[in-house]
Length: 116
Image (cartoon, rainbow, N blue to C red; front, side, top):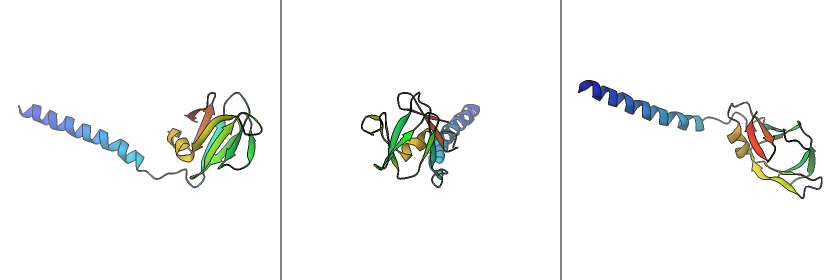
């Protein structure tokens, strides 16, 4: 009876600690906020982008741009920035894909974000 109780207490402690660990990870400081997140174009085509509704810039395959907190980037498939490829991806969205914490994310075909 006593060994079952110890097992139950140990299992309960393990469950609680497992639940707390992800919460601690979310509370960590944003290590990318000063330098920003590097975003690399790993689609099969050149694209164009606007940061915060600014000017339209060409974004060649394998080239990068940097996004910082508060920024929003729209990616287009035409040089006049009229045909949307990826709409309104903000800094927090890119940050959520940076699983290894190196402040680098890639976009692959289909406007799919992934860690780099």
